[in-house]
Length: 487
Image 1 (tube, helix red, strand yellow):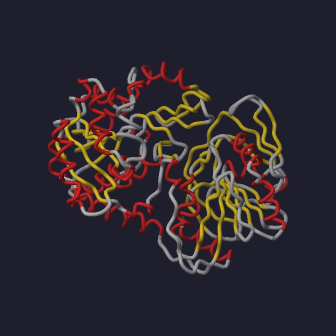
Image 2 (tube, one colour; image 1 turned 135 degrees about the vertical axis):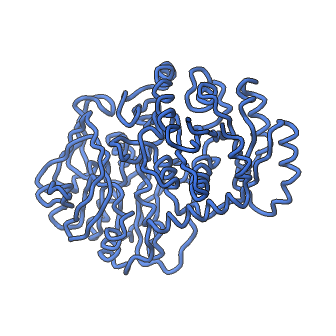
Image 3 (cartoon, rainbow, N blue to C red; image 1 turned 120 degrees about the vertical axis):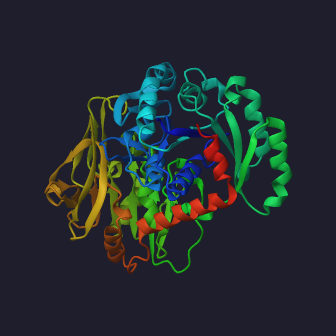
């Protein structure tokens, strides 16, 4: 018998859909249920490699972890990875389906993708007790309703009931919930069986009348008022909106690590374990700011569009900051796309990212990169040149080679060299993501920078936070009612 399902849609982006699904996945798993997360369509450059050899949005990988099951491509069958302001790479069931797809073309493509979505959903339903489905963006985007596969289009096609989530922290939550019902089709509104108000701060009694008013105006059940959960910062974020949030100030940090935040930043959760270290001051710098002159390490994160982000990096003057940092004897680490930027040139002969061209890199590593259509997607483990072990993953398009590759950053478990190190030993590049999530590798970097020993066990921190958030939802949501609403 197929598993029951319940879908969680939002009144907008970043209202907490991903986190609530993750928390419920852990809560129901702790109750002994076999849970699977599912998101029909996602848009994110923060992706994860799956056990079955593909890629999905980072949030679905976290939700799978919360449910204590391996991540699968079927948990996020359609993933859009923005490559420009108007174009995206389309990943279907874990593999590249189309590149540089413009928004209008994607709208026409969606009807062809619905069978893949329903196939993946049916696969997850087999052998599970409940599937928790996450919507995308806003349920009220009526301009995108035709051929929709992300929200009500999927809910209607799969006959899945919907819970609507509103974010009180941004204001106007009553209007956003009631307004959603007002603008969507009556047949879609009929699928909504209840609502949740998320990110409340203060005395919940002060919003009791607000919950009642929403219920009166919509006819939907009030399923809970969820207080703000600050510890969520310890969980990997998927949405780049998380980069807008300022971190709480730390006391007595010992090292400063800076990272430029470029328009097509990818897999930015590579930085999260550093942010969690008490001794590390992690500074994320957007265009318009300057990389601090006293940084101990500059990290160039991954990029979905390396050439475009190189252009943005230069326009922001970050290339000047990085060159000055190296002259002062500072360390630089490039991850994936960041590694490609550190070389002499980046060539795109086949127009993977845009018009065919070759551009100059930062020339801090004596290597050159040629972009290619073939994507490397696989777990990676091995040992870095300083002898520190690591486990992470590779997710990249392109081949990098040159004299500095004779000094590899790491050697993979199968003996293959990875990355490059400059002749002065201060500039490093690697295709491996997830390095800092490995306590052993992070400890080696902290020692290199003089920060002392690592103070956290990162995997344990994530697990403890998931457990704590599950308990938080048990206290503030009617989980028994949610189970009865699923069908």
